[in-house]
Amino acid sequence: MADLKLLEDLIALAQTGSFVRAAELRHVTHPAFGRRIRALEAWAGTPLVQRQRAPVILTPQGEALLKAATQVVERMEQVRHRIRGAGAAGEPVLRIATGRSLARTLVADWIARLRHRSPKVLTDGAQVELSTGMMKELVARMEQGRIDLLCCYEHPALSVQLSPERYRYMTLGIDKLVPVSQADTRGRPRYALRETGPGVPLLTYAGGLSMERILGDRLEAMPYALAPFMRIDSLDAAHGLVLKGLGVAWLPWSMVAGDCRRGVLAALGGRSEEISFEVRLYRSRARLADLAEAAWDVTASRAA
Image (cartoon, rainbow, N blue to C red; front, side):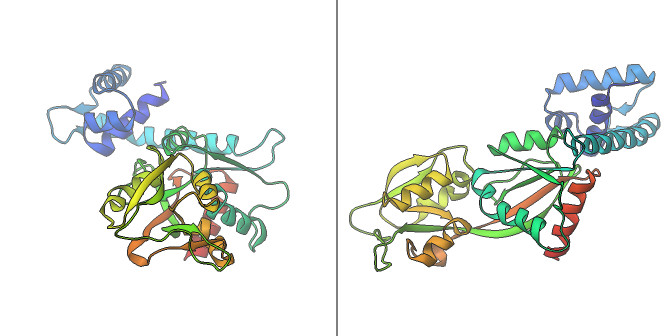
């Protein structure tokens, strides 16, 4: 029997029609990917690819093997999700990955709805495994089948690199970055956005953080006098520092709306200073464990 990864290689080659793009999709070098396809041809005992064509197409024998490979890979994905979708004692487990700030805002609200609203998905005995980290790490976990659902930000400056042939998504919500400042006892902002005068201390984000890429050139193009003060690798840390009155930061509205309503923070500027983005929920196109499928279906029906 051919190695499962070689069957997945053939599927990637058929989807992309290119050895180069398929190698990128499979996270190997172009020469290594070519050797793996030749190894599969050696196992099959016949050429599987018409290499002289552009885009690359499969031979009739390659098409026959592709059909079987797709069925085998999908079936193995289903079995893996079913096995991993249960805890040590056999109880169902929903495995979710997301960023740290989303974990305590939109994702927390979503899980609460799955737990408390009818129809309830997270019934007695069901468990949730929630993991956070940098987006590159979370995407790798999704590709390795270690999580069921991935919740992340989406913006033209920040796109999740998951193959649409293998994964699909729904929009879980729309959020926006809003400039905020600590407010005084009368609800007035400690700092104001000004085009002239001393620069307002700016709390911005370190490279690698999603928000840093979303802000990007938009921040530099704004006409306000801003003096970079701190670079931070955590939205939660930026939130805490703004609450301490250390500067102005662009933070997700889902994170600061309550503070603004209470008069602890004050939103600055207007719509032109806001930056909208999506919050997306990704999953594999292969069937997931029953609990993950139920969570996806209920979420999709409520969003409809």
